[in-house]
Every structure is written in structure tokens, then in C-alpha cells.
Image (cartoon, rainbow, N blue to C red; front, side):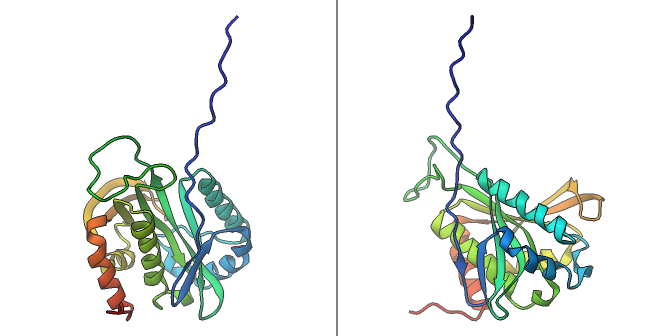
Length: 227
């Protein structure tokens, strides 16, 4: 008779849930409480979603939020509802995602903590969408700034990756305006929102580049640090 030793449950990395507040927006942990506002935002004008998957209708939105929360429970993503403070309503969603946790010895740069435990080492920012009325208002820029600040200044990540369908010139221009470095195009990367084979443009910001990117974003947002 073979006796099997019970497996020790695998530790699930779990970054702390946070609310990130700015001048225009507040990023709140995504939950089912935001569904009705998200449905209203996604229904305003869907013409801008040609290259972005945005749930259509309440059933799709519930499934979308539940799937994001399931990934959050596995430590793979930190999803947010974007609340536009001018209107006090949720107008879209975004995520810190593809969280990776680098373990074990390696030559970490002097003064860094070497990401272990529940602190991600690298992450993507993605799944960002806004209702039509919130587009072009500064909501997206400040949302990105808040997530980048959290990733680089609280988590001390080594890299943030941002991606866009290569055809999505508006999204790519917004990423480039952040000061992200263009890394190249991965051909036939995934299934596109329009059910074609999508080529994806990859961008990144490194930890060493964050201070300059931060200064540039503060200037673009009309914010300046006190001397």
C-alpha cells in the first residue's frame, strides 16, 4: 500500500488591496458594487471600442468583474474601478496585471529589496477602458500616474509593461505620451477585439526611468512638487 504525503498548500501571492486617490480620479478595488455604473459607462458610445474588449450589457459586465476578482484572488492581477470625482461615478476600469514574483538569489541593484513574498517584481498595466464622456478629460492620464506611482514607489517593481493593438493609434499615442519606451511589435500575438489575429505593440518603463517619467507626468497634469 502506498501512503501519499498530503501536499502543503501552495502559497498564493496576494498584494494588498488599495484605493489610489488623485485630483480627478479615485481607483477603487473592482467589485460587483460597480457593475451598474460600469454598464452605464460602457453603453454611452461604443464606437471607440474597435480595438478594446469592453463588456456589452449587464450579464457580460458581471462575468467580466467576477473573472477579474477571481484572478485577483490568485494574486495575478489588481483590478480597479475608475471613479471620476467630478461626477462621483465609476466611468471605467483598469488593472495592474500579469504580476510576476521573482524569487531566489540574484544580483539585485544596491539598495533595492529584491521582490519576494507578496510584492510583485514586474507588472503590466492593461484592460483599461473608459466611457465616452470620460475620454480626453485627463482621467486616463491620472489613472496611469496613480498605478505607476504605486508600482514603482510602493512595490519597487523593476518594470511596467504596457501594450496596445498595433492598429490602435489613439491608445499607442497615449502610452507614448507617458514617456514609455517602445520595445517593438510582436506579430500574431493574440486574438483581437475584432476577432482578427492581432499584432501587439509593446512598451515599457523601467524603475530607473520612473523619476523622469514621473516629472514629465506631473508637468503634463499641471502639478508641481513643492521645493
